[in-house]
Length: 193
Image (tube, rainbow, N blue to C red; front, side, top):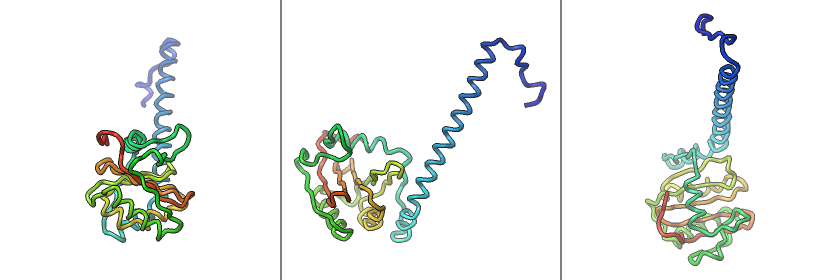
C-alpha cells in the first residue's frame, strides 16, 4: 500500500485502531488456518497416493477422494448402533448382521465378498471407503471398482476399514484387531447421503 493511501493511525480513535488490529489479526488467523488445512490435506493425499496410483494402474479407473466424510459418517451412526464409548458398531444389535473370521488378507477378501452377497450389494452401488485413521481421506467408488481392488484397499496397514453404501442400505466393517469382517443392512427408514 502506498504511503498516501495508508491511513494515518494517529488520526484514528483508540477503538478504530483496535478494530483494525482485530480485523488484521482475524485475517492472518484465517490465512494460517487455511494453510494448515491445505497442508494437512496434502499430507493425507501423499499417504494415500500409492493406493490411488495402484487403483489406476490395476483398473484404469479412479476413485473419488472426498474432502469431507461427515455426511457418510452421520449416515452410518444414524443407521447402525454404536455404543456411547467406542468406535465399532454393536453388531449384536443388527438383526441382519453377519460376522466372518478373517485372519489373513486372502480370507478377508473372501469374507468381504461373502458379506457383499449377504447384504445384497449391487455392482452399481456407490461405496464409501473409510479408515479408522481420520487423517486418511475417504474414497467413493462403484462397488464393481471396490471389489476389483480389495487387496489394494486392505494393504493400508493395521487400519480398520469401513465400506458403506447408503444407496444399497448396507455397511461392512473390517477389524484387523479382531481378525473379522462384520456387515449388515441399515436399520433406519431411508438413505440420507
